[in-house]
Amino acid sequence: MSIKHGLLALLERGPMHGYQLRAAFEESTGGTWPLNIGQVYTTLSRLERDELVRPLPRSEEGQRPHEITDAGRAELASWFATPVGRTDRPRDELAIKLALALTTPGVDVRAVVQAQRSATMRTLQEYTRLKARADQPADLAWRLVLDAMLFQAEAEVRWLDHCEASLVRYSPPPLRVPREAPDTATEASRQ
Amino acid sequence: MSILELHDVHRVHGSGATAVHALRGVSLTVEEGELVAVMGPSGSGKSTLLNLAGGLDRPTRGEVVVEGTALGACSRPALAALRRRRVGYVFQDLNLLTSLTAAENVALPLELDGVGVRQTRRLALAALAEVDLGGYGPRFPDELSGGQQQRVAIARALIGQRRLLLADEPTGALDSQTGEAVLRLLRARVDAGAAGVLVTHEARHAAWADRVVFLRDGAIVDTSGPLDQPDELLPTPGGGR
Image (cartoon, rainbow over all chains, first blue to last red):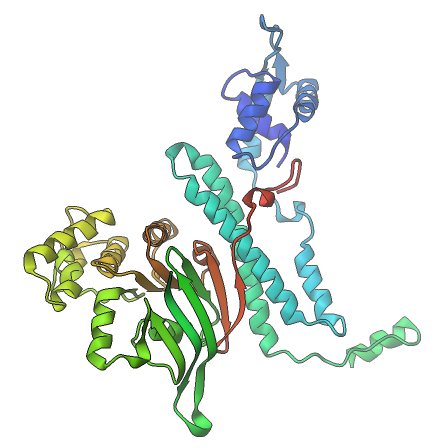
């Protein structure tokens, strides 16, 4: 997700200046994604350059609000209509860690799985606690952000359960260390 | 105060070569105001633990104590009375009697216990109101939705002076919203001074508990309590989540 589209979405409600945008952004993400005012102004000037927003005359307090343009609205509509691709997200360090744990001699993979599951479970408990506090209708946006984090954490626990179950039936093959040329080692591991 | 204590509890089904060790030395204490979730794969001993905690089964070795009463020392009638008066059960299959109304289902444990009809009825309606089913007393189970039936089962589990609440997959086949409402209810009752044990395989549901205990092959392999600083978990500024 980009700050750019976040700001466009907020400006669709009506013209706002930098500080208003920052406050509205944080409010709609329940404070999970704090912005600094510099990020807001940098983004606004890029949006202005691309003619997605335009500046309005300064107010009496000296604030300069921006409003969304038709091009900005089209950009926003296209953003909402486009699914977020999974490949845009960072590599999953945990999956890589477990894969390495499985192939590194002397590592207790079950302990790695267990430690991670405990940690993720604690995270889930805390998200749930935050969610239990957010029970007003006005908290819906924040609750949905929390739900996203909850479901992701839950998926991780389920995957870790799956890993644990798979490990029960797993006995590691003898590890082969390449001693000579890498080609020979690759050949050997195929046999 | 501890409402439930399990001391080195073992449960073996059968004997000899075919003996199945359902629990192997489980110790667990649940305090007043505490909800403990039990997670683990099928066959890990979750339901056995719950049955022992509620006096529905006796351990092969070790001791189960409910509100200061050691269940092993109880006669059969004393155990039955303790189950009726002090322990509330919510099971996945709700065990609502289809020929009784919601209010009659909720009132049943008190009636079995010899409480007067008028008082029983008053308490049953109050318990239904507490689970947001005020006015549903005269309905029969098949006139209620799955979520409403589950709430009737919870009202029945909570009626009277019960302080130990045992729930086995209470969100069963409910959709996520209804399931969450059931958990909020459990949580609220525990916060109001009961103690709860929640068996579930769903991490999102277990997360309503204060502590999560992981069982494997009849033994506790791990326990996770909550962190002190929830705000530390939130994504950092500019982070890509």
